[in-house]
Image (cartoon, rainbow, N blue to C red; front, side):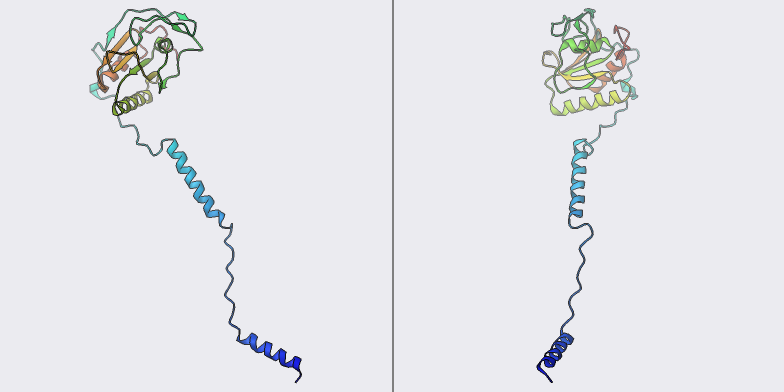
Length: 218
């Protein structure tokens, strides 16, 4: 037997006694970035939902038809003399006979009226008076604690969701004799603390009331 033949026999013997190689595992379909992409998408979805307030507690149920809110056969608030509704140029001071205003000279379009809703900053009197002229309600507050401010905001949301959408809620620094004032054209009620009953009664009694010069205008 030649040397070459001996080498071939030895190679065959080694091949027969070599342990089998472990099976190769295939690469996961889509690679390792697929699960990471799913996780990232879920994180973005949760963050977006939180930003929209999905996980915040909802507005507590308030039944505006509760008999305690019935304003029939009651005079709700104080009525004041009409201080006029003439428009003055934007930037010019208006003339008012109450604080906050219940009527008076004010700015015209486009400076006023303001969009309805809950505000974080105080609006000029010359703007909100135009909102009153359109039959809306302006609720002003000062020095309320966080809890009462939240309750007041929740109440305004409920009112606006139930047909009383022409309401502005704003902080108001110029008030010195109350913590909450609820105003309509020529009418106002002032409260020392948060109280939902007189607020709702006032809104029901004076929303788009007959005293407002342009009650049915947005």
